[in-house]
Length: 484
Image (cartoon, rainbow, N blue to C red; front, side, top):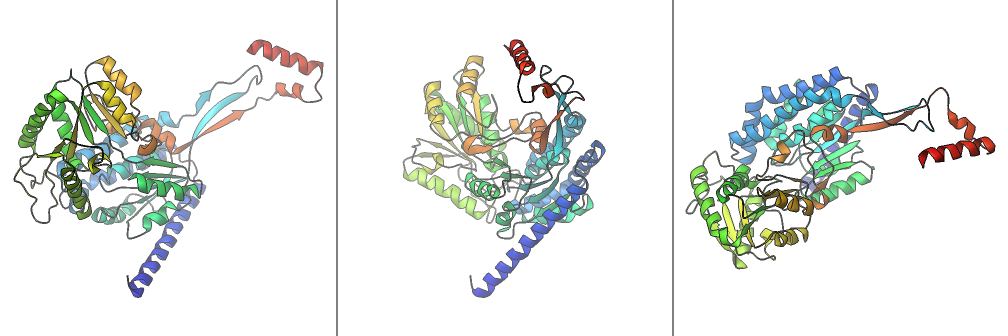
């Protein structure tokens, strides 16, 4: 970079840091002026969020399509628009109950007439860092619970969501004042500056490597974080489960958004004697449901870097002795479309890139196994995954896997569907993340569940003040007798 360009970039970075800081200060002052919005205000914020999506759903879909190069309109409507609106409706249904002050038990032996309460209160200003793969779902779903909790929000979009970022920046003022909600696009180092702001809470969704950097930045301000990372989420098909059904559900998940889903099936365990049947079933499913990778129904890979990474992974696997099964043989991506043919990969070894890092594309490694313990040992030698997908109708085997494989979440006999269940918390564990949102847990994450003790007019503790004598001894002995 020459000196002039570097100076321009440094100037831009400085201006952006000032803009971000000013926005945070405006939102914080607005919070201080109205620290605890009532039910009516929070309901209005959720309805405005819903209108922002529903009024502009076609524009949003087109913007995401341009960012991808080609993103299936149906996938956008299903996984972004419908899921978000349904989640807002769920929050509206339960908001009044969530906001209620909670009664908690009191020790009447020590505190007769006193009471304990937990009061859910807004934290203040919440920062949200959004990835590119589901940019509406992963921004507006958090916003649902941020606003339900009475907070304000600043949202930093991905560098791969340029068109959508511009659209949301322009749309937001029609629905919210900037001291309630502001969007920012990534123009270089914005994410770095954003993570350094002293938010009252920071939610990041993305890679583990970036998540570590975000957490380190937040730690300097003691900002609490919720991290939704990734991980290599496995599936296992038990001998009792109908293979054709498993193939249909796993391939649907694997090809949804061209595999660019953080909770996608990253690899699947198939018993040795059913691998050929799985391969043929996958061929048949793809032939029926995805006959042409250049169809607008088949989503593109987000950018050239991601496309190169997928190609390099397959090249590495081939070099190390794997067998590749192209499920759309003979098809190539149209020029400039970045369409990647769905592949199965057999005869894997642990040193292959495909088994070392999250795939994030339409490539499915198949690992043969003989017994459940073998599956358990393999998974538990690695980082805890974001999701785990056991396919079995055997209740004991379901319990065996769920008891012994720790993951952020799980679907039994399907994949991808648990984050869309609005009354289930969503979050990772270990290397796949920390914290939860969605459902009541989302409301709790972005609230301070503030414990309050209300003393009675009369306090028995006055009799326990020093100097300690017969009365204090009698009271202590009486309390011990009650407790023991």
